[in-house]
Amino acid sequence: MSLARRTAFVAGSLIAAAAIAYVWTRPAGGERAMLAARTAPGAAEPAPAASGIPIAMPAAGASAVRASASDGVGAEAAIADYGQLVLAALNGGTAQQAGRAAQLISNCSVVDITRFSIEALKSAGQMDERIANRVIDETDQRGRRCQSLTDDMKARTKELAERAIAGGVKGVGIIYAEAVRFDPPESMRQPLVNALRGDFLDGDPYSARVLGLRGQALGLSKVEAHAYGIAYETLAPIILPTSDGNDPPLTDQEEREAAALAAAWVGQIRKAHPPAGG
Image 1 (cartoon, rainbow, N blue to C red):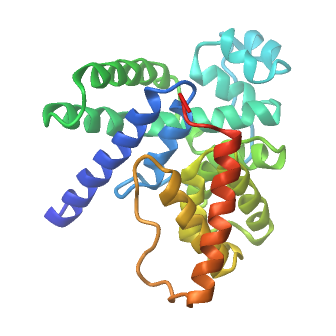
Image 2 (image 1 turned 60 degrees about the vertical axis):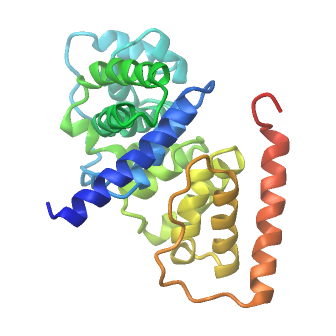
């Protein structure tokens, strides 16, 4: 790896980790924060999609997995093993289970980079040691549970996320976008936009970043795509680039339209999801 690529990788890792740490110190934020790392510089390439043939279920624990198939996401309370949760989703599980399984696989894929980044921030004195140790401990716990995921399971992230989107499940838009390298088939472009927009309006600014960067390729106008970028920069705790530098400039009128649209979204989100203590 060249020095420039290594530098970009480390910088992206630290930014992603900072975002993860920020949200992990707040209630119910860990799952979405992990997704921020998927769009950071240096993030790993997704595994290629596999066939839709169900993965064979091992004899041990198979009855427990099948019994939980109708329990939705709540099955995690009874099945602590991530591999079994993914198997339940792949073998006739609900859209909610498919979404949860896709989230687990995505989260597990950034465990190593998260730990490395938090350790680096801690060593550099850029993160409170107590918070860093807490995130490292949570990351290690997650890492141990991730060991039950096989390569075959990981290769079916796209399938799981697509099923979840089709079922209206929230929190999987970025996962699917990354699984198809931000270039979905024509039939999935609008569903992906809808999923990302829904996740954004539900309080996830990183989905707005994807729409800001890739929105025009997904069929959005340049004003709307720019508005998502503005909204992301307004709401995100850690700012990552929202342009590749090649976007055509907007006119003054378009800038005003984008700013007004972003302001309306931000107001809507802040009203629905007020900041802690606000």
